[in-house]
Image 1: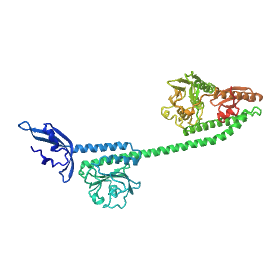
Image 2 (image 1 turned 135 degrees about the vertical axis):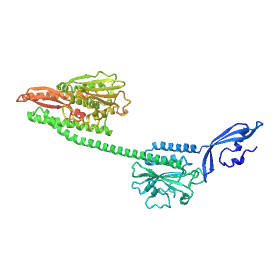
Image 3 (image 1 turned 120 degrees about the horizontal axis):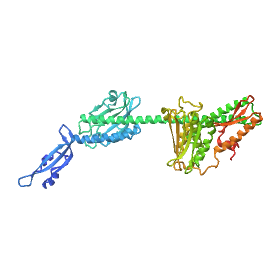
Image 4 (image 1 turned 60 degrees about the vertical axis):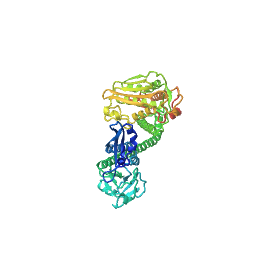
Length: 582
């Protein structure tokens, strides 16, 4: 029997010879071989082709194996298409992970290097900003710095007979083909083939700015495949993927630079506010101290006109001091320099004490105040000074924008959180203003209010303090119906810095100390009024002051403003003997 050895010798790399299939066929079994590589000389060169062979035995009259039927199917297009599709898929995946332009180029060429059968070598150049030179960003299967892979290619005065035609590609924005690589560079790598490539293609890499290019891609052509339409389309897709990757990386870098610039600007603004606040605080303290001493001096009482002038100065000085303190607190929080200390606190009792400071002011405004703060199941770890700022800021807002109805303060335990709500029946907030409500220096335009005081940082400070406690703040509102602010902070200590947790707190709250000091100062003012021969008036309160009326000669009442918030820091104020524990 002849097994066709002469016929098989025509397929030197078929992978299945007659000798290999004869044992199976001799037993009468059919066999096959899929996608066998054959370098077939059918177009004037050794062409990379793929075939699937099916071997079936042919029986003769005696029932033995008389021959073999071989069915051959060419699968070249499918094999090449799947291989190129894998390269494009890997290229797209690599591009999505790049964060810098250099990283995008490196990842792209690594993806191309995995397919040496189609891409024997590749060079990726990026153009300078002025377009005068191209710099090698990444290479595949060629070492950088060789005559075929210069690290810098000057585009001006480039000769067409030496090197790559990069200047022509930049000028025309079209691909350029070279068919004389051995003459220009000698033998270049051609893995996995024994024959080095002789043809290359230089392609433009477009940028998102239509009037310029981002770079240039130089790729080798397989020595065993003709540069046909499908091959050119494959390289066009590669160039498009690389252009997208470079564009995305540059956009990401630009966005990062913009974010860094904004962060630097924000840090500079925070430092500026902190420095300005410090510079304002010292002269304010020195100014308010003598004013408070003059108003509280019972031995040298002021005439009503002078007292009224000093009261105006003190009232506006305290307003400015509150603004400076809020700015300083906000800048410290943003800079991470706040000295917070979280103590286990009976939050319900503490909140009731703070709300009590507003009771007389709310009654004087002919509003109803409802305080619903039952004891919580467990103490809540809070920074007492910061919690005070939250409560007082929210109550100040409620009083400022409410002209009739009521203000309701509630505190509840809800699923491992302490939830404070401050509701009012005030003017309300337009829906378009709610997303910006807690932004620094944002004020609702055209809002009707009792006073025009405010800088737009009170609610921003409330949000930052709530975040320091691991909580959050939210607001709901309807124009003409009122507003509700909700502050929720977790209980326990797992969310707090371990080095900022205190064991306990003093038995007497700051609010109680303030009230005791105000009572003593109020009594002193009444005695001074009696010595002047005036009938003392009724005391009334506001969120930050207590006003005591003293009758003047013409039967009118002058106003003495006693600050609820001392001009110096609270702890210094207490240490200087302005208040004693009760």
